[in-house]
Length: 355
Image (cartoon, rainbow, N blue to C red):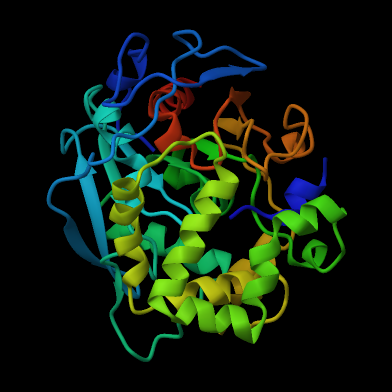
């Protein structure tokens, strides 16, 4: 999930599809939330939505990319402008099961990969360290773009996905046409992570401290216990989302990846200085330690019911975005924004592509 320090402080290949608003369109879900913010969407405030229990993708595809054999879903015309949708923890690609058809219907080629350690994505070698420092995950996506011969794309994400998209936009801006970042600027500042946050912030991060213990490690390494933990997290971070068992179980299959525990534990332990990273990523982490700005066109989304959303209008992270920019607060929606409010998220992608 997002950077506790950030909380404590308060691309396409063409443009034809970008001119179309989603106003009036619906996913398979029912209306629920509404978007509001410092700037209105091109088509005005849009309804959100809750995911239907059995909405899913079709056949998954695979491609060797960097150190991974990546499993991903794809929707829309093969020659359309590309949108890469990146999921977070504890979620999977089905956070975008309702977003993808909305964007595909507007002419976008939508690609939704399983991140390392999730679903069908596998490491190519047993010798590759099972680490998950932030630059490693970002480089996985750059490698995926290379493997699929995608020069530029709109990147859209939440949680780990936002952080990954932010990093690519900051370090490789030529690969990013526009950005939708849920939660704002999430590039981890490891030095800041060493300092105490406000008590309420520390309480929200209970699972990070749990993962730092042997008990937490044992829970994550037990498939049944990890799945129960992830389900509980869903209820805490999306308090208004009435998801059903089938919806969670569909995503929980991704948590059975043999590297899942190692990847999740390393990611959270690495952030707070309890685990070292793979040296191959050291030079990228040195650049990220400087908290580089994001210059590409960006829409930042803050779900109002997400406990990780800092209070206010995103002003705490505004200075990190130096290009065309909009901030939107999404009322009545929690952490898993694209699945809770797919039309709102899809509209943000289209609007970011037009900035």
